[in-house]
Image (spheres, rainbow, N blue to C red):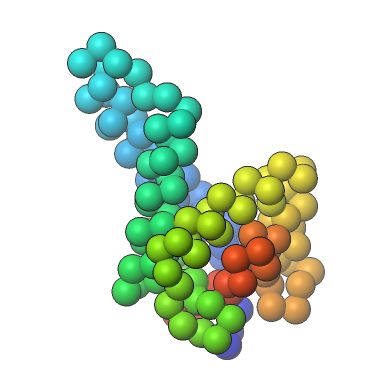
Length: 127
């Protein structure tokens, strides 16, 4: 398997952050007209659904990942389930909480895995 490196994953993540930002702005605008405001919890759920549904789809990738030609697989190269994709997304919190070291691990591990990839037993490969 051709593992995806740090910078390709970084740019895919940046694209996904922009996409999620746009989605939450649209949802927020819709709710503001109804005199509500989107909560941090709702933003988390939107992100969880975005990553969970996209990564467990037949494309096995988010929009950012598709743009950079990478996808998520399990350790055997197979498509991951929705629950595994959601678990992986929740584990990204840990990768970020330790000052981003969980993400930096991509540059130094044999299979270019971040901490959350190791926890979820997933790989990010070039498609």
